[in-house]
Image 1: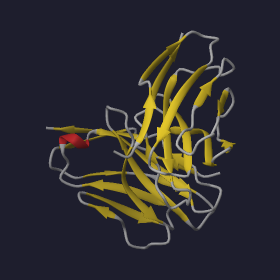
Image 2: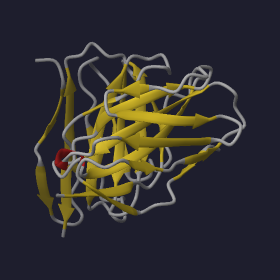
Image 3: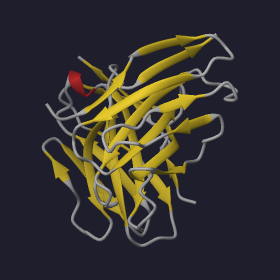
Length: 116
Length: 113
């Protein structure tokens, strides 16, 4: 079974600075998808970024980018120019590309605090 | 506006009572999911459905039941057999292919006393 590990329960960053959140996963599959979700205090889960395992290029969405290291099974999220609105829980998630295995497997999350 | 609605936002029940949480989506998604979130934990899958009139157990299905009579709706019933039902429940939906991300509703906080 696949597992996702987020080793940093809490992180903090100064406004306008850069922070990196770590995520590692365990799988025997070669084709899969990885996601970062944000959960602000409202508790609505919001997709931040996604990465297809077959793509070597790291995904980028505005101030958010990932460092995907397939051999190391690592998928970190970098937030540049941090803003107060980035404060939230961040969850890393794995989804198999195998048909019939559409469920997301989540890590336990990292709570990000942004200090003004 | 397209999206996923869950109602109510907060729900209180007495122990021993069944309770049904609603989830409706107008995104024309084929697949729908129910997750449970506990403090300090990630989300855990309860049930999912890829097509109407079909659903599969997730990792923690015991004490829960679902139905999928319409594409838009996937209600979750928390039965009295669920030993620790107090939690935050999130519904999600996606197109069936695994590459598509899941979109989440706003969640329902269930408290059982």
